[in-house]
Image (cartoon, rainbow, N blue to C red):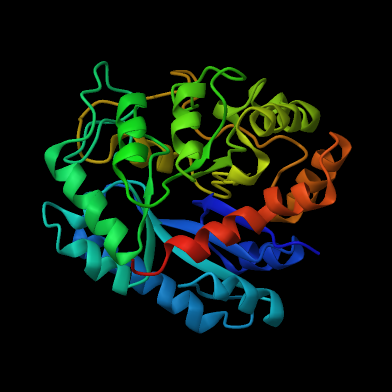
Length: 325
């Protein structure tokens, strides 16, 4: 049985969800511990996770290295890897990159929809690319072993990050723009830049990123993966579901708005129904993870390719990029 790794979730964490991870055989999950929080606020989120690790040691533990995926499989648990969807926890201090790596953070997005101190977000009208600080922070992330994540970043910034970084970068959760033209989905030149430099991309199950949204079929989703694999190589892809299970609709407001505006930013949602749309019927939660593997097999992927797409490729990427250079 291959590893099962989900490269992004932001669920409303509970024992129920941790048990569903085990039912779905999910060996590792990259979880968001910051959207717009500053350093101190993010430390409080780490404290929450420490309590969950203490309360549910038979279900989850804090993952730090690729070997922890193997440990999770061997012990019947799920390794939890920390990441940021925004560089706000490092504030304006490059020294905090190393501090956060020591606290167990393994991914950081350089921007979340808007312009940051490091790079441009995908909702901005203009994308001047990486900032001066952005280039320095990438170098520091390369040094300590923190993955550059460009999931919510704009095209030029992403291409520049892939080229500037001395280690492969990631788009942990997105789909092909040619399949579903959402602002967050990635055009071929962006995917090419990331994959040509050894990077990884995780395919998203968030309905706004799917063709047909909540009505997207498993066959359509796997066809998109097949197109990406044919163009760029199956070894560069995995799953990053962006599962926001059991979150109240008010969390969408926090994700999109944070503290940067007094208005409501609906983003890719609708002004009528700005909350979370229903998941497609074939991927409601972690228990359905195996459905994706079955769909990939039905699409003609080999057993080894399916194993890679379901988690083996992420496992290899973790091994090469979580440790200091």
